[in-house]
Length: 251
Image (cartoon, rainbow, N blue to C red; front, top):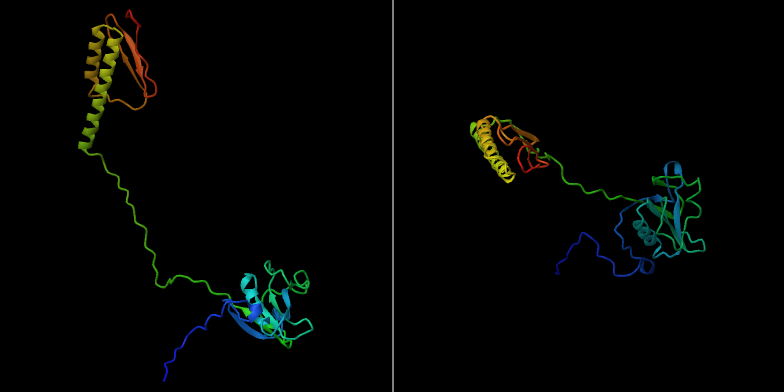
């Protein structure tokens, strides 16, 4: 006895076209609503596009594939009644931009008689069958018992400056004072001011080193030294002005 195999899905049709061989090659899902044209509640007609000159072989797969290709398609109906122009089918909806060649709306898109919004039934016309398109549900992640992780908490704690940090800051500021003192003395020598001015500057710096610290904003330093050289000069973080000696021979 030969083993048998069971498949859950039908085999794919061979390469070709529905209009030629009658095989449906889409992936849409449709419910059979009943006999007749598709209608809305109260048997209100729905706008459509119709294809004629079809055969028993292809009149169903033609409209089914056409409905697959149009996002606004609600469904389709088949018409097995040959009125001399072959069999026919309809697709239902408000707009079908890709269905142009041989597709006719017969004025239904603009007529107030065709104001149906959805397919809810069939009108019972003999020889016709209505099929409603089933929208595939969106795929969502499993959210059962899902608890989002809380964002990490950031704690801002204010702390006081330690004595060691304060001493380090004072040493840094004192070093800056000494650098400024050296620069000022160098400028005094370049201007040819007397040695008493340099000595007075050193004494002023030593006397104020423990009480004054340089500031990052504008600082004005005034030195008054008795003798042959009296001068005022200002330093700024934005602009450095050369000191001018009022009583020296060279300004």
